[in-house]
Amino acid sequence: MRVRFVYPTVFAAVLSLYFTLLSLQPGPESNILGEWKEVSWEYEKVDSIPDSGFDYHLTDHIKSQLAESLIIHEAEVWKFVSDERLEMRGKSPTKSLQWKLKGRGNILQIQGANSATEHYQIQELSSDRMVLHFNFDMQVRGIVKMTFARINA
Amino acid sequence: MIRKYRNRTNRENMQLGALTAFSAGMVNVISVIIFFAFTSNVTGHFAILAQEVSKGNWYEALVVFGWIGLFFLGSFTSNFVVINVDKQRAYLAHALPVVLEIICLLIVGTYIQFFYKETLLETELMVGLMLFAMGIQNGLTATISNGTVKTTHLTGLTTDLGILVSMFSKKEYRQKPELQDKMRLLLTIMVSYIVGGVCAGYIYLTIAYNVFYIVCVFLLIVIGYDFYHTKVTTYLQEKRQPYYRKTIKDREPQLSNQ
Image 1 (cartoon, each protein chain N blue to C red):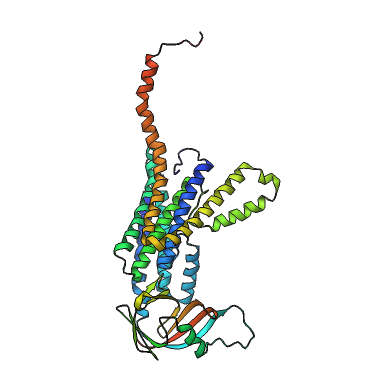
Image 2 (spheres, chains in turn blue, green):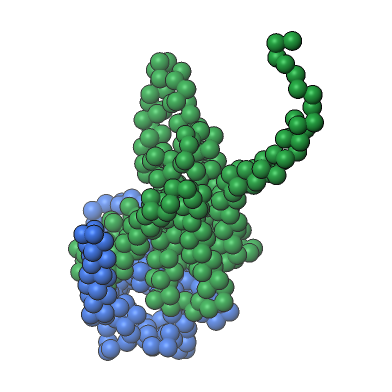
């Protein structure tokens, strides 16, 4: 009799607490909305560190070479709009793409024209800073860390 | 295959292990491809939970906590059904969790095929449902095999395999039939899981979301096998009984002492 009472009570209590806490937290889908400016492109990880003075920043030349085959090519300002539209402004004309979040909100999927899709790992997403990791295997092998600063919400 | 109401043989454990591990491997790979989240194991989710808490990402931490909770709930449900359904209906008790798992996977497959808009909420719910299904499967296989067969994750299995291989370096252990049986069982589960994952990766490229229906077919084989061996065989024996009786009746009585 006691068990019949305890089990449903504990389940109900845990569920109520869980959904209450969940409803109080802003999700990553709302956190990401707004305009973000690219601050830096760096190597997050490399196969081996040549020497202690290794510069982790990617030069503009390497960056442009890497980005050539990417949807995000030469974009400097990323604007995430609530209807899953992503506007990219930069040296090239403004592009309108589609964005979606996957996993637990840690994967950013960007879909361009002709259904090309790219995935970026959201390493950090706060009110003023966003860090994306992008894994590629082209001229240089490693993970690229892209850091953004929020321009406006 | 899923019966516990008499002593299980190693062959039955291997059959159960092979089919369910194959299904789990498929589900796990397909969930990573579509949702970018693992759904057949929770060890990684515990690590992610700790990581998200340490970063202060409370929403993500709660989502992962919910997923772990659903895996737990799946295991709870399957064992709850097994121990609470009338012992006279043992087949039903063991088949019901598999039916629940099939329903969960059918819901996921159908939803993805017809309604999925790729929103984060949908992704989180689908992953949760798949973790619930895998919790059911793991709970059931562990319950009916007395903890011998666990097919949705390979951490414990790899540990056991390492221990067994080291034991086999001594002749006295190498010759023990029960250890040989265990080795066969572990290898069967491991290979089936990997093959399931590889198959899912390959066939996803051609048949996309229909992979879920294939997993359901494998699970139907699991419950169909026992249905055949318990219900159909018993039914056929009962049907044949009048014939035997009649044959015996028509014969001349023979005295054994003659």
